[in-house]
Image (cartoon, helix red, strand yellow):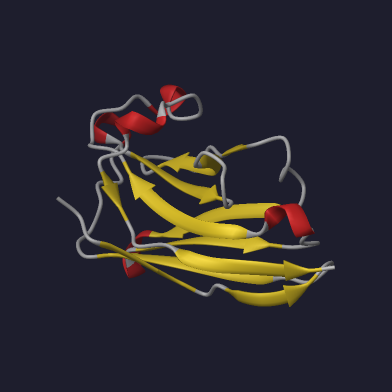
Length: 133
C-alpha cells in the first residue's frame, strides 16, 4: 500500500497556472517490467471523477484527456517520490478536486493510458482547484 499526499491546489483566475504535487510514502518501482500507473484525476461537483493525465512509472510515456492536452503536463521525480501536474491556461471547467492515484505494479506501460479507474488502488485525499472567470 502507498500513501499519497497532494498539495498545490488553490484559487486562480482563468488563464493562470498552478502546479500540483503528489508525494508517495515509499519509492515506486521504475522498472519497465514491473511498472505501475500513476495518474491525476479530478472531480467537479455533481460529476464523476475523471482521469486528466497519467504515466507509467517505468517510462515517461504520458496520456492526457483531450480537454487538457497542450495545457497540462504530468511529470515525475522518482528520487523525490513525487509526481507533478503543471496546469497552464486554466479554465473555469478545470475547477474541482484533484486526486493523485497509483495502480499496483505489473501493469504494462502501454496499458496505462486506458487503465480503468477501478484499477487504481491507492488514492490521495485530494486538493481543491478553483478557477474564477
